[in-house]
Image (cartoon, rainbow, N blue to C red; front, side, top):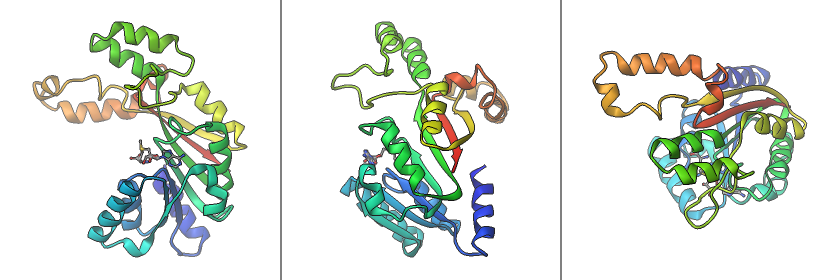
Length: 233
Ligand SMILES: C[S@@+](CC[C@H](N)C(=O)[O-])C[C@H]1O[C@@H](n2cnc3c(N)ncnc32)[C@H](O)[C@@H]1O
């Protein structure tokens, strides 16, 4: 779906490079891949270490001229990038760690050009429960299930919150965006062990096919490790 968006943006811009904004872009895995496909990418990221790795990665891939790295926080997005400037805004792994996800979604929406899309990838609270239960951490699984934010809290917990399908949909709609898709990311792949896959001839292909269908089939979608939301301005 995002490929089709970039093609449409290229047409709208009469062949000019689509403009992508990757907020919380980390060390630039996605940014470099998109720049290699001809996009003009701005990465907003607070961590200097991540930005240093991004810089190295972009140099090695020969796309440094297509990436602008900005050290900063999503809270100050309106001061860092132009309003209404991006065809595609990415926030992958970001909404779980910001102070206020509703404020962040509004800021992300403000950076979108009319007709542009926001892509978010977030941790799923129900998958976190299942994964702990399967690994025998049953007390943690129950605590996660009971916690309104879907977190364990404390020093071992990296995230401030996890999401479910309806919570994510409401969050995106609350930012004034039209939600076009919520699909699962890794529904069964994280539940199938490597040894089971190896013992099964054709296993990896069959798993990939199963994933494609499960990703858009509730209630399987609803227990995916991560949820992918796409919403349009
Ligand atoms: C889980 S990583 C995801 C990195 C990348 N987007 C990916 O999908 O691989 C989250 C990133 O968000 C950054 N981050 C945390 N708080 C942020 C904020 N308030 N604004 C922007 N980025 C933030 C972190 O430094 C980290 O690089």
